[in-house]
Structures are given as structure tokens and as C-alpha cells.
Length: 343
Image (cartoon, rainbow, N blue to C red):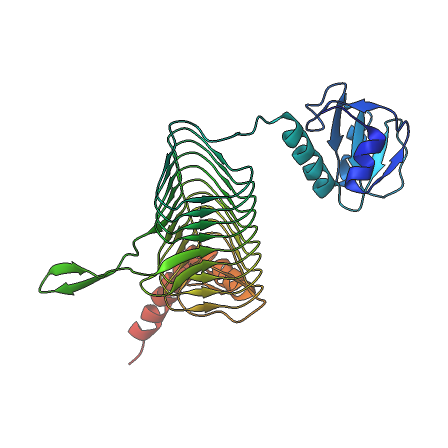
């Protein structure tokens, strides 16, 4: 990247204070930056770092403060800096181009404009890949699957048959979409497999981390709603439906046929049982175990998960258990002493 401060300010819709002709060639953290870099600062209590950073310019909030450093004032410094990083990445990255000779294309494959297929990509029959899709080496795409405009699939992703992937979806390495749901009937100690004949549908603008597994439905669909972001090492079982703009953090496990509403946050290592409903706007804190449905717009915590304030009280009481044990033991001794004096 080689942009003037003015050009960057226009890109992030900010206002320059200082020399807008400074040329920026990179971006870094406020402590790691060197001359030519731009950095950001969003927390006012760290404003003292402004004059000590080696960065040539800083993206800040619109607060008024004194500094000799050129700044770009924005409504959201963190978001603005993320956009700058994306700009740098777009400028510097070497994108895949064309179709590698080792890629294998099945019958009736439909490819849009500017599709890139890396080495040893396998695309089965009747697959449709839309415009500006990049698929990195070692990806498998099963028959009759569809991939929407501008999607990006990193190396060694497996997409099973009839999967539907929307526009601008990002899928990171090692993820498996459309594997069989975990369904068995046990008769006289023998586990008989239940066929899983449904599909997975990933809606637009979803990002899926590394080594995520999303199972195909027994019937109908497993669905990930538009704008939802999924961290690494998440397991989503068959017939789960996840709403729009959810955040699902690492090592979450969601059991079959559970429905998660819009704008839900599931923190790290949360577990959800099957066949429950999680309302819109719910926040489930880390390592919580959810065993029943949750109404909209509340925070829950613990295992089993309870309203956050209730769980905090339970935790506070549990911290006092050793003290209560000693107290009860002493009271028991005194009661036994009093009883021994009774006629």
C-alpha cells in the first residue's frame, strides 16, 4: 500500500488533523509501528502513547486532544483501522488466478467470471460456482453444490453434496460442511445408522473458521443465517438453524434441531442441548451449559445456564461453602452439647 493520509481519510470517512500529504506504506499496532505506518487508538486512557509511537499517523476517535502527531478522527477507530488493514491486504495479496491444470471438474460444472481454482481442487458433477469465487488448493466440492458470488474458500475445505453457499462467504482451512448428522437407532445393543438426506445452507456474508464441522440435516436443512461469524473448532449438528448476525466463539457445540435466533452471542466452550430455542439477542457466557430454551434479550451463565445475575449469586454462595461447613459443624457440636444436658 502507498496512500496519502488524505486518501485514507476519504476511504474511512474520517477527518485529517495535521499534514494530509503524508504517505502511508503500512499499518501496525501502536507500539510496533515504524515510520511510514498508520496505527489506531480507541481508548482515551492510552492517549499518552500518541507522542511515543513511531507511526507516521494515528486513527483516533473524534475527541478533542493535543498531539503533534497527524491523526484521522473517526466515529469508530477500530472499525476504521480494520478497513485500512483490508485495503492493505487487497493491495498486497497475491490472489489466485485462473484454473490450475491439476484441478478436476465434473460434468455440467458451471463457472462464473473470474473464478479461480487452485491445485488439486475437485469439483464434482452439476456444481455451480458464481463470479469472483476463489477456491484454494485441496478443496473438495460435492455434486450439485452451489457457491455464490465473491466467496473465498481456503485450502483443504470439504463441502459435501448439495450444499448451498451464499455470496461473500469465507470458509477457513480444514472445515467440513455437510458431513452426516450423528443419528443412530440402538436396538438390542446394536447402533443402526439413520440416513441423513438433508442439506446445509450457508447464507450471505458468513465467515466460518478453521476446523469447523456443520452437519447436513436428517431432512430439510441445517441453516447458518446471513452475517453470522463462526470461530474455529465449532460443532453444529444436524437440523440446527442459526439466525442472522450471530457470533459463535471457539469450541461451541450445538446439538441437533436447536434453533438460535438473530444477534445471539455464544461464548467459548458453550454447549447447547438439542431441540431448544434460543431467543434473539441472547448472550451465553463462556463454558455455560444450556439445557432449556432461553427467552430473547437476556444474558445467561453457568451449567445449567441461569440468568447471569442469578448465577453470580450462586457462585458467590458457593465460595462461602467452606465457611458454612465449619459453621454447621460448630453448630452441630453445640446442639449435641445442649441435648446431652436435657433430662
